[in-house]
Image 1 (cartoon, one colour):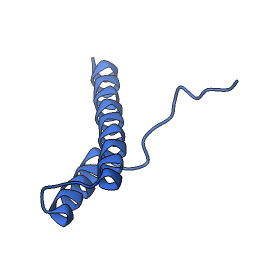
Image 2 (cartoon, one colour):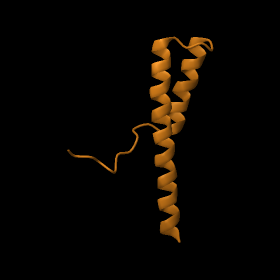
Image 3 (spheres, one colour):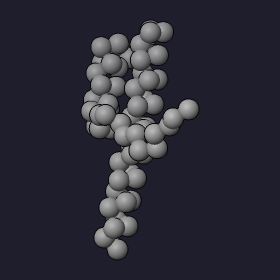
Image 4 (tube, helix red, strand yellow):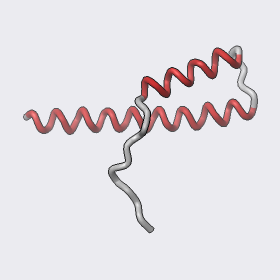
Length: 65
């Protein structure tokens, strides 16, 4: 079974956050079951993007030292 340890999110955390905000606006503050699933997927994607960004920043800082 192959795994990729260098997998990076396709979208930035800011782009995913924008989609999360738009979802909440469209839903009027109450998510349906389908919208909740979408929200959970987006939050997972956002979290991965934040982690990847933090790792990139950490790697850049370590290289500068």
